[in-house]
Length: 234
Image (cartoon, rainbow, N blue to C red; front, side):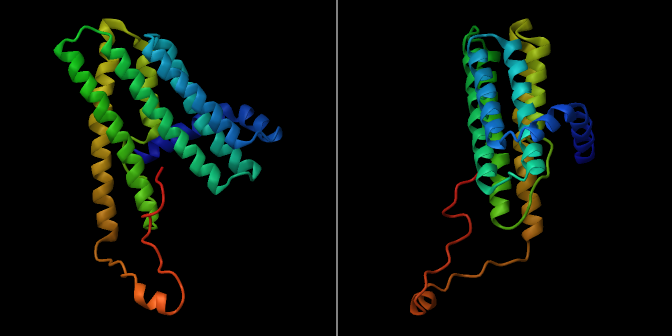
């Protein structure tokens, strides 16, 4: 799956290279691209809420392109920074939550049949699974492990929801989009579980050293905080 993902990304980058190169020449700041992508994705949430489903699909996919732009431009211009990575990741989480809230608003307008109620729960599960995928990677990074395994990374979620909304819109009361949402709900949570198991396998047998608080105080220095306990996660 990782091989397929990289092949698709490389093909897409090859197509978009003229735009990326133009941004690099103009020294467009990657944080500006992250902000634009955030606003575009946020607008898709409003489009869902107002039942403009195909428009929402276009906006989600366009916002996903800015996710690709900001990282490439940051590396090519040398403007990559720790804050930029934090800023981009935080905006991604906020905008993704907004998209799911937009979907909740969309299905809340249909007749409250059993299927629609089930879809609302599926949207909530998809949102929870998406956040857990991000959290498990961020927490693993706090342990010094780069955990990128699993099927439902952000790119896959953007493509699946965006294409379903764009191609099928609200046909049959949003049936195609409903099926995709259910698939995302299942696969995101399976991916989160996969990451938990993967991190367990890569940390099995290791032991964290206890903080010698009394010794540190006696030496006149503060004890080292537990990794990740005082840090936000992406």
